[in-house]
Length: 235
Image (cartoon, rainbow, N blue to C red; front, side, top):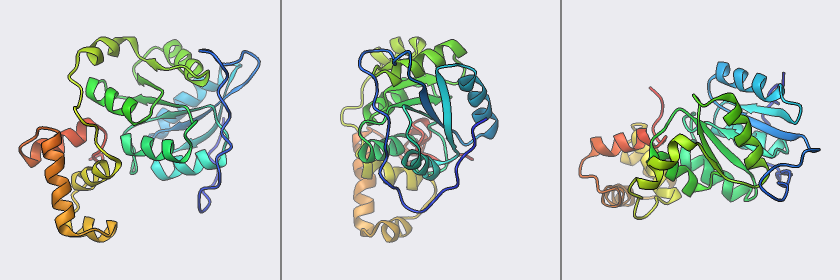
């Protein structure tokens, strides 16, 4: 079984493997996978499944957003299997960070969330595929291979709901996602302003803009949106 390498300081350049041309990975090339999930038992199950395939190999594991970034920096991989709900950074914010650092990195979201809005948010942030944890193993394996080969994959059971769900008129910016995540974590305006080096007034403006953009008129519903979209910490 693959083990997680010790986390070092800083993020060296990512020598990510390039995806093969076409919709399927090259048959003679081993597909290298990083698994990012905060539950050790889930990671273990995925490792056993992936490593049971002759063309797939787990090269690293990560348990939170920070270790995910470090493992991506240290280990060339074709596909990152990413859970949305991990200690921060997480969710669409983490996907955005990965896409900014390593634009060609292939990302397959593997999560418990089956909300069409969460699917859309993850794809808009830069994920290449989306699948739920209760999917059949063969669907997951096919999704890994398809995403590794440069394709895109959304679990079939989610496609219809996503196609007919109302789209968010204007996606959240990375800063708005960060503000919302911090608010959902219970941070005060003063704490957010101090840690992000912005004024209390700017924090309030971001909060007001979030509620306007999301068409939400109370803070409770704003927190609920954060929970539904992987931007709130786990209880």
